[in-house]
Image (cartoon, rainbow, N blue to C red; front, side, top):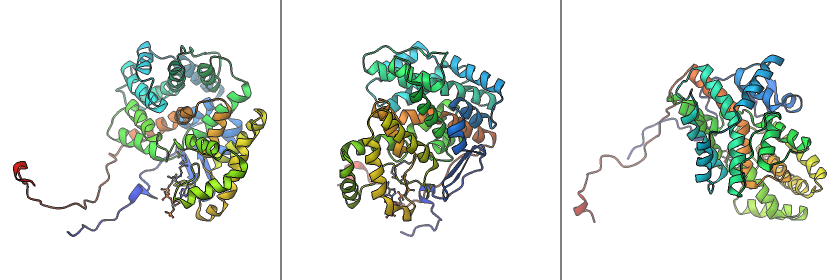
Amino acid sequence: MTEEKVQLYRGLREVYIDRTTSSFIDGDIGKLLYRGYNIDDLAVKSTFEETAYLVMYGELPTREQLAAFDSELKASRGLPGEILDVIKLTRNSHPMDVLRTAISALSAYDADTEDNSTEATLRKGVRLTAQAPTIVAAHARIRDGNDPVDPDPSVNHATNFLQMLNGEAPDPQDAALIDKDFVLHAEHGINASAFGARVAASTIADLHCAITTGVAVLKGPSHGGAAEEVMKMAQEIGSEENAEKYVRDRLDGGGRIMGFGHRVYKAIDPRSVHLQEDAKALGERKGEPGWFGILQNVIEVMEPYRRRGIYQNVDFFSGTIYYLLGIPDDLFISIFAMGRVPGWTAQVVEQFENNILLRPRLQYTGEMDRTYVPIEERS
Ligand code: CMC
């Protein structure tokens, strides 16, 4: 058969699908801006609450705006009892599947679910930002046979998450690392999960549909799942001396090194720079510097790949940080998701405000005009 002549953009590589003011990535020099502000400034000077406001509303908040936003987040952290029942029913699923299911189920308890106005979408985005950590922490406790810990309105977002997870107030330095990690994950252009969220929004489905889609898409190891894989790799490597052989064997076998490579960054991912420093300091503080040493050696072995634009990405060090904070491996992606709810929300608002159905084409390469044969005549 003759194939119709079309221009194919497999993987939508380098395809721009719309305009945005949410974030800017210069992949050639490793630069990331949220609403025009450099991630390097936000990582060290901002907080997750302030950054979430910036990403969702487009401007840094005044003191009063931040206080009101923070109160709204704190007041929204609780979950209806029925959602805790959903979490109990799905306790044996992967934490990302539980998060996706609980966010989807929350649509039944949100007065604004079907309202796609900008105001209502932002209100829902605030609530889902507040509720995501409660879902993840409640599930982690329930599956271990423990009761969920109630959210604490007297502490910030990151502290509250660790407190709900572990049942005790965290070391403030640990909470500060999670806060920074949330800042670094808040928004990131039209990555696969944001694209998924936008596709849902483009059909004029609501924010719960879009964020449920975002969580589903984030789960894969090519996207948010890489952090978990990096820590597994570090454990398999086991010692600094073994890193070189492990990496070479994996690459020679046609495998990939998780936490390396990016569709957009062909230079160092600026988020990984902050996490690298944090992972080093945390390893020393916790008396376990070995993990950082192993990962550092992996980077050295991967040096030749830099010529091809393959550098470590955000997931390379985040997993080590979570591990050193005592967080179970299968919760790593959920932490990424918790940080990303503001970014998904901002992009859904953008999609709604200038909507166009996201509906590309596929080139058909199968057979044409085949004759239908009744089942009794088929051999
Ligand atoms: N290790 C070894 N080789 C790699 C890697 C890697 N991690 N990543 C890309 N390559 C090679 C790949 O083999 C290919 O080589 P060739 O041209 O010889 O076939 C070339 O680089 C291009 O790879 P690609 O898959 O076409 O590039 P992509 O832009 O589609 O892939 C990626 C991006 C993130 C899926 C990929 O780099 C990868 O699989 N990385 C490992 C998983 C990972 O760390 N994911 C987290 C991404 S950052 C956080 C996030 O956004 O979620």
